[in-house]
Length: 414
Image (cartoon, rainbow, N blue to C red; front, side, top):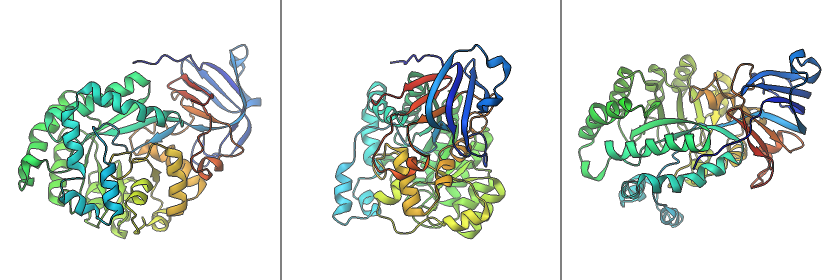
């Protein structure tokens, strides 16, 4: 399966550029144009300032749609085997996240299903999930491993993630999350498993070119601060950037540790401390908000939004799509949930899935804004204003998507 899309080259007119589309803080442009040449942005701004070289090029009528940069889903676990709806039922009956894990469910149940599935089966299961995200204007995303928990099966996940990016013509950043949970064969031997992660899994898969970043689940039911640091040091030796599942269920100080290693992002961060915020600000680390997991787990401890805002820490928003705690396949729904549950603003929400989402993946030079010289990744939205992207619950506008310099969606509902 490989998609072939028509070129977006030419001049796009009758557009309304959203605030922040060109760069953080850029104003709304009500009569705008975008020029695409060889798949890259040659001009974006007021239509009456189009360069003379644009005259005579093919034109695309934007129908007065609002335009944002292509969306970025900077935290997903999209490739896995099986489903975990039964655990959802357990939680509705009162079981905690920890109790589900102790009963043999949780991440380990997905590990069993992922190990049993072939690469082709994993691809076929993940493809419709990816398509659902693409239908809403996603132009780049992260896909983590973490359900294989062995060199063989982590590699299988990461190869499928690479294949998805190629087949669907979308930028996929792969993150190695071997330190996600303790596999059954290492029960009671967490340190032995972390040694395997650092000494074999990580360097082997890095040599195969399968890893763009390294993540750890640093938590009371995951891995300790010392074990997390061990993984970070191994990643650092391989020249790989790091990310962290930080402060989701408790404050373990993972955010400070991650910031000390120059982490791209700290994700979840419901229990983030003032010290963690200061460390992230100093390191330029993005705070990734994951309202889907917060909602699905019926959490009540909100991320410290006002403190993050006051400190100037960039905030991204992502689906955290995974089978156990956030089976979310709508980034637009996450915008509403982040705004409603966490009280971020419309501007913060849109920046969270463009500018800051891109920065959380190290993609700020190619995604997150409509900048001259950058690949053409933008979305035309048939809405009355961009606030509708945050407002609606369950409505998927028939958007027109330009992705990697091609017209990936024409605006017809699929």
